[in-house]
Length: 147
Picture 1 (cartoon, rainbow, N blue to C red):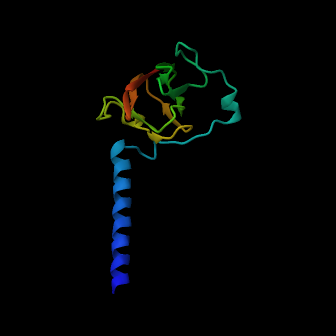
Picture 2 (picture 1 turned 135 degrees about the horizontal axis):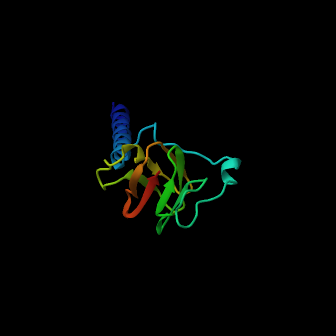
Picture 3 (picture 1 turned 45 degrees about the vertical axis):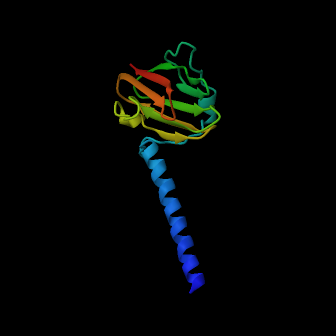
């Protein structure tokens, strides 16, 4: 009887911990499977021209997150272009649409969590100006301008 009671208590504790961990990840920043994509650049993507320092239209359309923030802070792309964010910040980050903390301006830009060394991408099909931030450090902001 005593062993059964201990086993039941352990199962309840493990189940509760799992529930809290999963619910914390979901409430941090909403993400849909349609917009969150982990990718590894192909060799052809890696050899294309890189973004210019001014953030003007470029073939690769890359944004890097470091501990200092997003670079370039503003990136201009053509409609239909894919933008890839690479996390080199040393920790986890969450890409989320402005404004903080509601993330309602452009929900497809709520890409979710990515770890240091990871990448996320999104294809922008409609012209406009899209602001975003790192939900874990809202002072880190960026803008994608789609023409």
